[in-house]
Length: 103
Image (cartoon, rainbow, N blue to C red; front, side):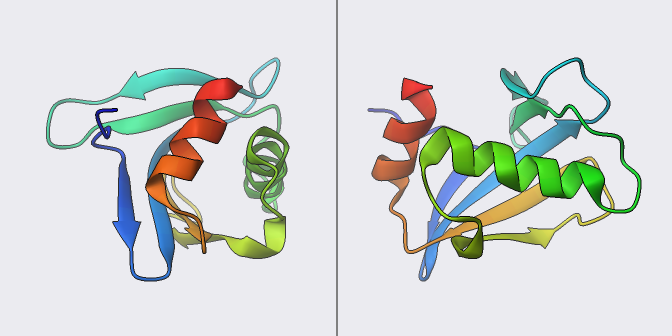
């Protein structure tokens, strides 16, 4: 399996580089976004970017997709940006890719 540019192994888990589109009709993965060297996984989120609502919905959606508890998900970059990096603590790249592609 080829590892996409938007996912990487870290010492404490797996980092996923995301591009978020808030205020969507429903939360869903849309595919890749960006140019080579800066590709992110695009996710539409059914919540507005107000008072952290989009971030909460993003973490809830990722938990639903992967089964990984929110307590092991951490937005490590881009708290108030559409470009976010999310750390999945204690999860390998292969395990996470399998969970994301099954959804």
